[in-house]
Image (cartoon, rainbow, N blue to C red; front, side):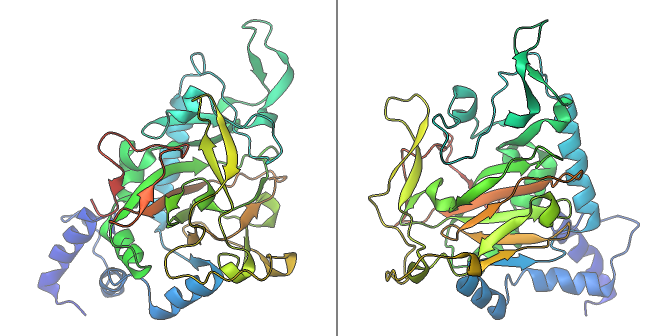
Length: 351
């Protein structure tokens, strides 16, 4: 255990690196166990955790965030939802169904990679326009009508930046084999009560494709997530070639620059070093419906098949998520991906 004279230094170092909400001169003294946990967390994942991630394609880390951190992120989320101006908003809806003839793809969406923008639930609108404005009429207050907030919270919101770009997450990324982890597509997914839409089965590398695939999702539960309010459903092992884990399609910008579409993937379909064999597809027998407590982190392999059902409950299911891709030489981020890098490139995970 650290000696007494080391505690202020460790506390200040942890605060600077986003591992503790306590500044150096806080009157709240961390326990020896908390100080030991800080040191332990810097080692990244344990071997058994890496093995579980490689076997299943996902890993749940309970209590990754402290209650104070969760409270702060929820407060920031509610502030953003309350303060964004509705009058000037284009009322862009975020649709997730594979069969939709028109996927989300207006400029408000396509230009959101380095901004904080708000996307509405389709079921939040009535069938008749607002008689006063002529625009689509919301059936819910705006803070209860938003599907998600994105896609650069990790750079523009101080609370979300602190929880995203830090050495603790960089250590986790190194445990998973990343050499130069880069962060993109950060967002709060609200999964609103009664109207939070279902997300069909998909693989994240279909949307954030690198050659070869490298994406991993960081998914933080800001509220408890269970079957009633649309928790994650994960298909165990479906990231591997033998379980149909190949990336066979991609979500891209249309070549004429207007809108988005799915196209066939003609590039590598599995990450480096993974088995190329394909023998079967994932089935419902592989599906695990997760019960996730607030503060937990779920790591999601970019090739693993996962989904979530509609939130039919009276409780929201707020979650914060961002994705990490490999930025080292030998991996190329595709120029047709819907989200394109800002002028300075994607953020380093440990800055």
